[in-house]
Amino acid sequence: MPRTEISKFGEFGLIKHLTEKFSIQNTSTIKSIGDDSAVLYYDHKKVLLTTDLLLEGIHFDLVYVPLKHLGYKAAVVNFSDIYAMNGQPKQMTVSLGISKRFSVEELEAFYDGIELACKNYGVDLVGGDTSASLTGLTISITCIGEGEDGQIVYRNGANPTDLICVSGDLGSAYMGLQLLEREKAVFAGNENAQPEFEGKDYILQRQLKPEARKDIIKALHEKNIIPSAMMDISDGLSSELMHICSQSHTGCRIYEDKIPISYQAAVMAEELNMNIVTAALNGGEDYELLFTVSLEDYDKIVTMEGVGIVGHMTKPELGLQLVDREGGEIALKAQGWNSLG
Ligand code: ADP
Ligand code: MG
Image 1: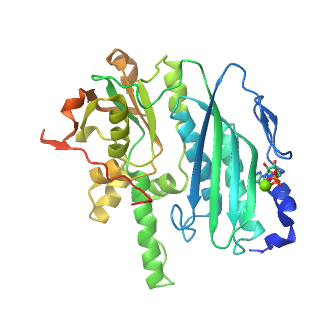
Image 2: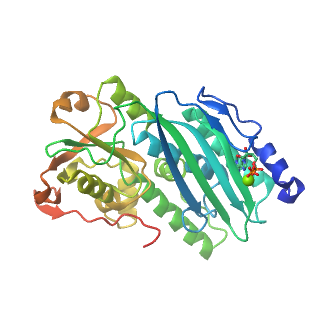
Image 3: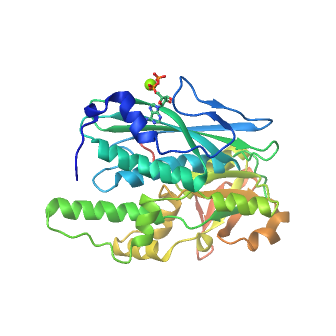
């Protein structure tokens, strides 16, 4: 692989080089990269804004994360936060702290991932900032989106008796991470070791190339369902349910046998002697949607593809309960992933 030093381009040349193939897709983008500020136009719309900071060694490990995947994921997890408000992501900025260890080619790969995410989700890259840093890679992404008046969904709107719904499956991204960590440890002990990834493509993809659930937001819209509360699942179902319950002043009951789990995640958990339900409840980075709907929407929800009902909200005094396969109740604890922990 050729290696071009960043210093060859200089800051302005580098930004131009990395961003010139991006095209504008939204009419709300008036002015993109190239001036002192981007200019956006949102007519009679609510503007949503979310930002994320990703640090090498804390949030990602470049030993097993390809830079193109990292770019894609860093963008998509921000889009997921906008969808979780029932909005549509439209613009993003990317700010980078880059050490000398990185070459122009590696940054190109990172921006290839960002560009693919922008294309797949219809988002414009409208700016950012770039600086040299002493060590590692620091990424800060901000995403701007739009929401229709009266259709933005917060975490605090759930009512007791509402149904609790989850898209996709849970725990797969976490099991993908466990697999990558295992292979990294094997490789550290024997540099000739070949990674064993056969039959594990789904959990790897869930960890390395997650998608935001744009499709679910669209399907809800088509069915005229506005959830009473919603958020994306980045830190595990338990921890996210706690946020919705505490902000909505409710309790909840979820059923162990309703928690959606993929076949590959279950197999991986067995191989590693881990409890898959614990992984599904507390593992992070699924980027699925957790939402509550009124009982009246039951008929519409049961026919929705890719969405499962995992339980229901309750009065706050009943607390947060997991009902196990034998019918026993266990109090839910948040053991979600936390980089400050
Ligand atoms: P300023 O001096 O105002 O900070 P810069 O020279 O840093 O401007 O940036 C020039 C243009 O390039 C701006 O439009 C800025 O938003 C954009 N930009 C800078 N860094 C990045 C980046 N890493 N990714 C995308 N756009 C960037
Ligand atoms: Mg700047």
